[in-house]
Length: 440
Image (tube, rainbow, N blue to C red):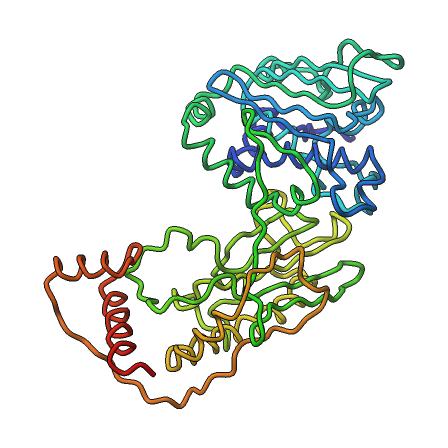
């Protein structure tokens, strides 16, 4: 005798599990990713193009304490995709539609996870220009339904001749209390804008118009110092169909004061970045994950302030070394381990230079002053990392003395130092005296 035992998941449990470990910010980024992917899918010229390939396809986000909305003119969701794919939790085994495309959405849970995270009432309208549909979902009612099938009802379905403009519009109301509080906080919008500037800079640089409450997000592409003896690194390799590009160099000149006591408001900008299909996944990393403190590479120290490295992976979404949240990478992925070996070599070259720089600052400064800033988009396709050759045999001594804090603060102001430490004031004072009295 045989009998069947139910293995059906609880909706409450499922919703809790897929929303528990993802932040509000990352849910919003998932929805933006869907819009960007829809542009690529519905407009093949975007997949093959460079330059301003996303131009004329704006993505607009508006929110307050009552609602959250995202709207695009990407070309919408087809009825067949809406019926069999878009609202499905995860991809079916035979689904290959994004496996071989350079998209940034892959796992098939982003939109559902986001709407469950944000609120209870969900309204979606989507149009391809010929077909259209609406979804009006009460999450709590759907959760309580005892129907064995997990289905949503599509309303106002038009199989042809729709009058709705192409694109997708999502509006979420009855926000969860914690989400309502976050969206009301003016600091949240500021934080989100800065996150989007960082994580979508490469996509924005290709023409995407991204708006938050009516304000357009500007790109924040990194630039590097380049001159006679200083040049950023750029090299490209491949692993089983994945294109790997590594760009790294001196974004700003290293500081003379590398003490831990000095405040550095923009320190999060420096370190290693990991980018998958133009989407920043890891930003300004200074951990062992990107090679810091591993074997012959030292751990991050303020001495290395100003270093930026970017490793990009381009290929089929399912093959890239990122996680479902697109906020971390799989360090065991063979494409990443191949890149990491090259990343550590580059890091080691920069840290070695800063060690020698301590003993030969005048020569280093002279070389650094003969540079200009070059954005990442203007770099050559391939060039070796170059840094000045410095003599590391110069004997140095430490100078230490105490002075009244009032006098140190006054001297810092006179020297026009921004948020100085006492040690930096001492160094600047010595340099000033040396130049005036010795002049060599």
